[in-house]
Image (cartoon, rainbow, N blue to C red; front, side):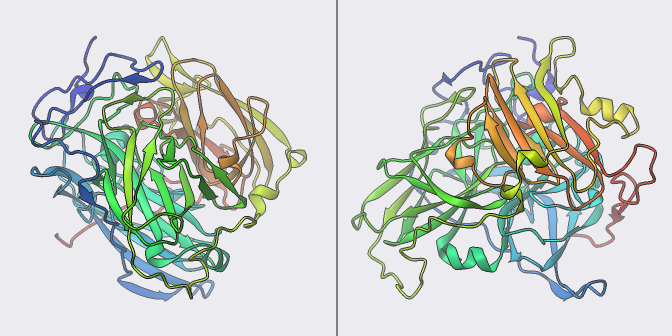
Length: 536
């Protein structure tokens, strides 16, 4: 195949991995390995202790004089660092505060946040020379457009931007990640990703908290012989690594008590989808989706989990004996490349540590949860149905949505929009994937939506909750019901197979505005980044 420079990047800059052929895969493919590590340096499953990303405390708190609501102030710095991922070798990464993944932000609904993101990255990427400019997207937040991580709203090295997050939505697992135009995949793969948790009284009453509320950021990677991350996006089709990482560690082992645990599973892989299942055959109880709690818990043997989706599941470890090991497997899906150990994610070792039975969630598996506006919407409320098709253009070798791409948005001076819903209107959006050979996780910014059908039938049990990213598999058509609230402005829709997004499967829609209207929240002109005169 012809090989472009971007296909053969190695984060350590040593050479070409050549993980696969162009347009690989068209189905589920198995291979031995992708990394160039020696056997002494190649990690193996279940030899690393589990760790959680640290919580980021606010550096200040205050009150917003406009509405009297509390505000937490945070600071994260994007910088190059060396992570300890492999047994003996260091791995250069780009991380929030130099961490892979970055620190978790956790706060209560109704407490606003101002997050200062400081770009202290090198001026240019060591591999391909692209400018290390970033745009931070809080995925799952109904943010104003200028704080939404609009792909072309870039913060250059040496600058910072203050992102304002309203945090008025119901409790949910969000995540923040880089969204810089045309280099989102490489930047996020290099480590610019982290979880963000929003709590509320309903969720706190129903689900485990504290050490029993466990964040799992799952990703895959391949490595060069020196321990550097390898990168091969197979002609912009996708990257499939042979090492599964959980919170930046390969196949870790977590010690658990004999009680109920809540796991927040984020698939931060830039292309790979997962199908989690327990080695015991016991069910995973899904209690929350991207947008928070489901109306009712769903017990599933396994489920499909695309990049950017978040699922919160309960696992009941009470039935297992002390010393027993339970593995979290990955049964995989179509359109992945699978290697020797990518069928495993992590393991749990059951201990005899005493359980605090005063905690009412220690043995609770709730069935009824909560509804909310998104799941209360009905198709009869829709004022318009819009149709979208995801595909690859043979003429341009680019990924598109209805033949539209981000190149078209740029060429229009950021004016072109594929839809113009009215503020507070309800619409049905139908997404069709009939091009064959790929699945596409479609993310729609601003809104939570309800999946009302998949190929004319009911959605899968595990996706019967509020969503912002939908798995659109081969030969699948999904219908989504959503209300366009609470902000006017331009927002993005794109594939979260990030090499697809970068080339160039991203469009925008305009809420409550005409193209000729003056937009005070224009993300290209409002809230511009500021020169950072503080070194470090």
